[in-house]
Amino acid sequence: MSEVAGVSSAVEGKDRIAELEAELARVQAELRAETDRYRELRHRVRNDLQALTTLISAQSRRLEKPEGCSNCAMRLRSAVELHNALDDDDEAEICMSSYLWALSEARRKAFDERIVGEAIADEDIFLDYRRAQCVGLVYVEAVTNAMKHAFPGAAHGEVQVLLRRIGDRLELTIADNGCGFDLAKVVKGDGLQLIRGLARQLKGEASFERLPIGTLVRLFFAEHAG
Image (cartoon, rainbow, N blue to C red; front, side):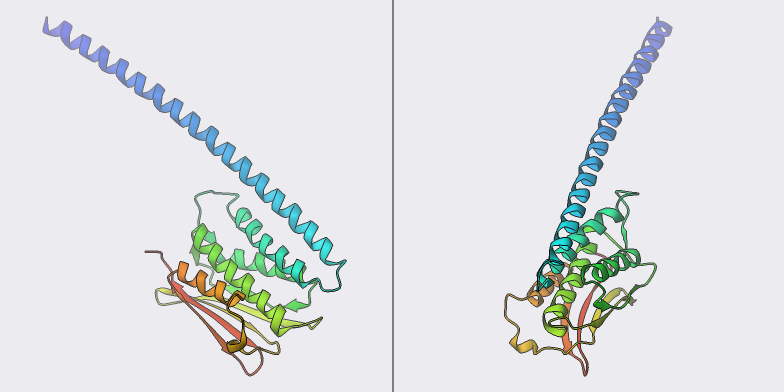
């Protein structure tokens, strides 16, 4: 009798394992389907942003003062490049060296190569999506401010960007060689306030310095969130 009970229990156990395996397979299939839908949606958003960026860039070439359109196009480009950085692996962190290089290329195209310069980052710096986005927006806003104040009109100039590790913190510097501007006279709603807000999101600090030639924007923040 005990042998029969043991056989029955074993059969029930196998049936239960089979049920759990079937349930697991079903959940995994649903997860794959949701992941595919998410990727498709993200690709559509990226393509829409890309199309809008191209449209705005084309429109800027028809304007007497194209800086506003160029700045808008560059903001959109920063979002496109973040989507591009996630194409291969949705869970991967953003390689800041590649991301800042892509933003540098976007800057060059947006301003018809009036603004030149390099964007360099330590090769082993990786940030999650949200923090990478904050750093990218600081870059974009610093360049926007340079266009408005340091390189007015059709002036040409240079912007140098460096992201490096100092101990357990990261330092982003954005320096231009423009005419500079009086920080005390910058209006409260200007991009500098946005940069300060982005720094707070990173639990870091932003500072601005008038150089002998140009202006320096510095962002200092912890490498790891926490």
